[in-house]
Image 1 (tube, rainbow, N blue to C red):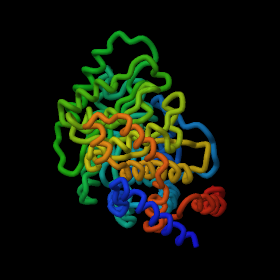
Image 2 (cartoon, rainbow, N blue to C red; image 1 turned 180 degrees about the vertical axis):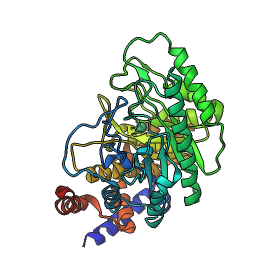
Image 3 (cartoon, helix red, strand yellow; image 1 turned 90 degrees about the vertical axis):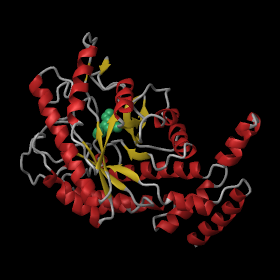
Image 4 (spheres, rainbow, N blue to C red; image 1 turned 30 degrees about the vertical axis):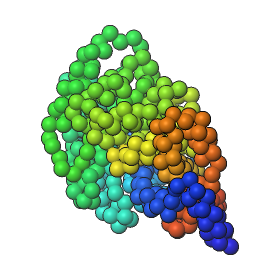
Length: 417
Ligand code: RNT
Ligand code: ZN
């Protein structure tokens, strides 16, 4: 019954979109190529599997204590696969260096090796997923306020070693999966109060990065993530947006844009066309900042819609990687993955359904009333019928029907942890 309704609605939508020059079958085809990089850290509140016993630090915070978080590697894998059952398409998993398969052994950050991630590579392959990677400089006794930009040479060397090893691991992953592993560098380095040696720490960071990037790898790509500020580090961030934009443009690195890392009224959609002219690719961390970089679950909002529209309008689907980055510990964590992933994919659906040829024509002819009118009308065209069809064809639940399935998984599995 439901399938029939989805099919009927799709047929109507198909005709309706054809009237404005959009082919929905082609849109479904393009949609199936959109691959999200799911952040592994939503499943366990950014805890990881080290035996160092450190709490989350680095100016980021998870709030909430909803029961059932993944406590070990097998629970985390199980939860990720569960979430993937409700997300149409083929997706990637984004690992942090602290999520290695350490087997209870104490392996410090400057000791990690590809072998600690071998079981992840195998697991990902079995489950038709590709992996991405992140160095982890927070939640460690040597994290402090400064890592790669520390003026304490032993601290700086420790984090250089860690980051170099991470690149090596990312390359091994990329080689194993026959697809480049994208490795993100985000460091929290900064200070709480007025800082007078701003230049010094940026010089040190530059020195560290230059050394880290000396080795060239064929199977991994580097990206750099800036931030406005972290909690307890409000006055100065070494790796600011200007800093990394300049560094990435100069050295041909990928820029990571996190939707929570800019001034509250600044939206990152406009940055895509600016950056893509000077950096090779862009990685996104789609999140939802509420008053600060709170990492609430991604929903359909103006920011994510604009962002997806810009990816399509820039014809940059192959140069923009869509990663998610949020950690809400106050609701069902698998549900959080599914809500955010589906919201992002829904925004991509809307973006792909835009009658871009007609809009561009209006713009070129300076018919701005027509452009605005059509943009507004697009918001209420039956994009949801196309989305539902995508879910149906992908074999994942259509509409809200996934809610009860996740409740069941909670009753059967996560509530018993
Ligand atoms: C922190 C950054 C960073 C982290 C992850 C865990 O503000 O957004 O990307 O969220 O590395
Ligand atoms: Zn981020």
